[in-house]
Image (cartoon, rainbow, N blue to C red; front, top):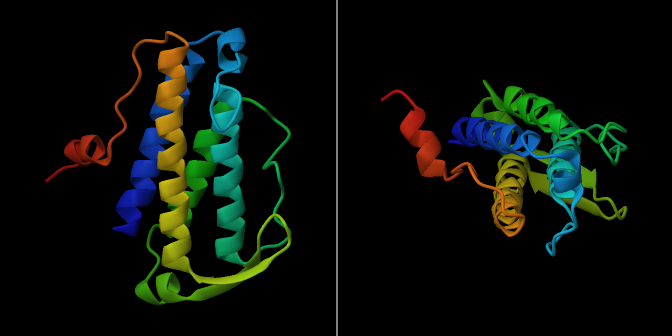
Length: 157
């Protein structure tokens, strides 16, 4: 299940990145009322959060924020691929392992890896939902369907 969610996350992020790239830079940066002020800011937040969780899962500190200086939305799939690749082939012991980490405010937490991964994938889903609303507000068409079931239908039975 975790491997499928990691692959789904990558699939959905690629779809949104490709769609957003068809918009002008001005459109990608136009302010829209949401958790983050623009499509770019939302996509980069997903990227930076995935990078942070990946570092935590691997026990690497400190977590760089932002993930990199490049503000191109094309950078998101690279991080989603790394997260998926980290998860592929991991056994149950790794998923059930506990990791101690610090959040961005410096607070210490300890959590099981599978819970951290579910949070990360759910976080991306939440913000992709916001991207849909933002794209509609901006008058964009061709907004990709990103439901998990749409992804699952692409898989071989």
